Length: 252
Image 1: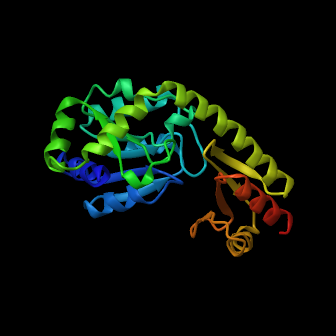
Image 2: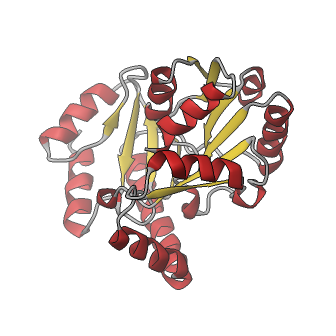
């Protein structure tokens, strides 16, 4: 819900061109186009300075690319000088793979997005929030209306953010499971090219065939029409899932 509002805000501020650091999930590009912006997906972070509305995911989905704090803040400052806007999507920041810049959202050129659907495993709650300058926060709140997030969801968010012990232990667990996943993929001859502790990206010309093979074994992965050699794996949910994945990889 926040992404369309941010794209519309950029248009109201005079933005005409949006740059999205690619590869990335499609929602940022889609909502920017819906707002009337001309959108380009770029591979080089340095190219984003040419736009007046820029979007990056840190750490990135699906390749796990990490952007340094200095570089992000430099881009935010460049945006400030031309009344542009940088949106940093930190949906995967809780994995510990990148440094959050939420403490730097003190000017009206930078907005940080956070989500509970990834690290906290609560996608069904549809819960997230923006960290921004008070003027931006007030504008977003006025456009969202008073019932954008339910009371129970707010309570869940408050409890989750305060539970530092759970967060620490989950990071350790995810790191162990991520290593197990990467080892299994490596043993199957699949080259790992990126990811975080929540997912792994492999790149192999056999990916389309592997996608179908896994699906026939009851295993869902994420394929990419524009990058057919890429396949993203999530973590199995239990030991039965691990056994099914490992057997499917062995039989491929």
